[in-house]
Image (cartoon, rainbow, N blue to C red; front, side, top):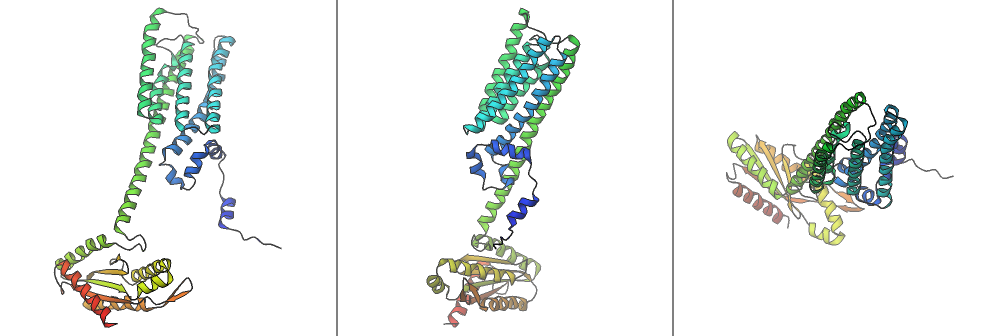
Length: 395
């Protein structure tokens, strides 16, 4: 009998509730988008334009499709005659069919999100234009206010160039309306004056709602992008000031904090300790067992040094097998000697890395500010000299 151990993934599959709507939207995404972002976390996806626009536009497609069904039924029920009502209903039915076809074309041919944005813009423009024609094609048409949504949507989804182009197209539509209305052409009118007044209010409310939605989307994406950029800025800042292998402070951060510790010691009449640490026989270990063992040894040493000091102190890797420690705001010299002995003792403790027994001993040089100098260069030079003296005594 084979017994399969239950993994964390199995537990996750049992406890996480699947959202059918999210699954449907994910299914519609082209493969190149899903493959590009499959390794990223959900909070990172919000900062990716392609992924975010895909989910956003597909959601708008679905909402517009539902609204089209409701509008088709509503227009048919309130029209002056059944034939005119059916004509109005078919405008929204055609919009719904067109959007469904556009979504499937996007899915099947792995097209860009720009296709979805442009396709939605064209369908919405034609829908609003034709529906206005069925309401007399004049300045009092209820759906006319929704035209403002077209350039706003395109500007946010498709970019500045296309947004400006559709702004011109929308402006030309209004210019055409200005010249056509005086001609008093005989356009069909689906509704009586009272119904048109009600639809006019709903048209303006729809325009306000759509504009609010676009601006909310813009603000939401802008906020997400700012958060992402701030996180990246902090990550780059951390990487520029820390050693990538051990996570300790690098030489740059070490010098900054050593300067602060020295200034504090001079101003507050206390002590600051600088410890230089050099591993003994690290190169033979690295050459004999390989760089991967050497890297793990450096990481183990860094952890031992970190756990031997206070949170207010700083441990740094200066390069290779050289480490340093800054002891901040120490009252007694004995406390600095105690920490140095504690680090030395921890480095002499044996450890096993990948089955290999090692003893990462080290030579430690100590300098105390302001006893050994009031200048940072002098103190660092004293610590370096003391460290080499300790190393020579072992030979």
